[in-house]
Image 1 (cartoon, rainbow, N blue to C red):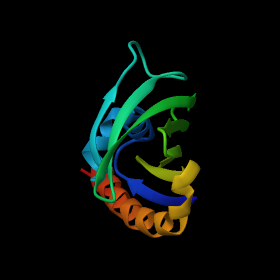
Image 2 (cartoon, rainbow, N blue to C red):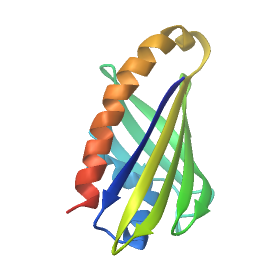
Image 3 (cartoon, one colour):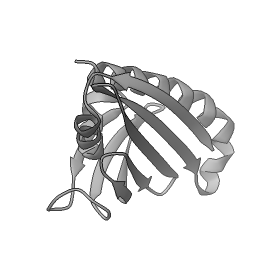
Image 4 (cartoon, rainbow, N blue to C red):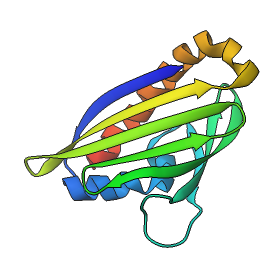
Length: 143
């Protein structure tokens, strides 16, 4: 299992930051490890909304389908992504700080099946990937 947790302050309001991040198809704009992301379900975003995300990881592009499992605007949402080798659980909380916002991004990646043999390497690689994603998030929240 690999885990990353970071907090980023931004100039976007709490509502703006929440709306932008809860549309998980926007991850392709701020996370350099995401090649493509799209919303799969129709209608407004909420519990049950699905997103397809293609992540570049260790030289391979891997698709994951994420499902919104918690949706509490404008302060918190949780998405869970999965494919045959990995499960990803991302919780994002957003709080108001003055005119801006504070975003806490908590991500956990768990390998499945035979892929668990690579768990020690996952922690190292995920740390570098998470650092780049947080840098992109910081830039996106402070236009």
